[in-house]
Length: 166
Image 1: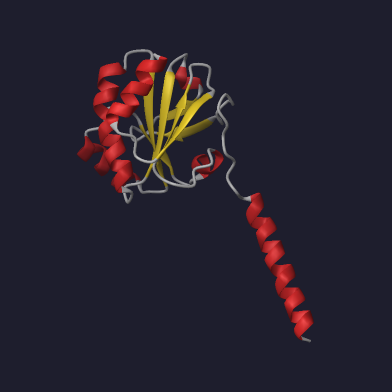
Image 2 (image 1 turned 180 degrees about the vertical axis):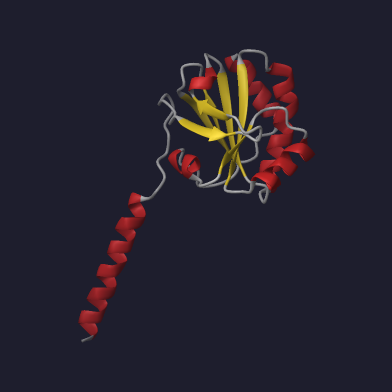
């Protein structure tokens, strides 16, 4: 009887593990095309990525307001964006699973001038393999991953990286 219970427990554990493995986010590798997506912005227009990229370098921040390093990174990106934007560089801040009103308040408090997108279901974050916050993806003008930046990236580091590629 004990052996049968152990076997059933073992089998149930294996099945749960296999089901969980199928839902594990994929990790993008350098040089791979990024997964395309379309999300609404706070301005209610839907942006299509990478179609809207049009030959620009693109920085995609994934964030949530409960993540202090995310807010620091968004704040640090703003002056870099203002200095370097102008046809060759774009930033998108993709909020994960938070209400529009809350996201709008944070974006206003941080005085963000770059687009803020709403990933209400978390599907886009899952497709990008986001398993920790903050995480950002720098995408080359051809829509391929150049690098993944995990953790709060200081503005100086971001600007140095962009000066290398721009």
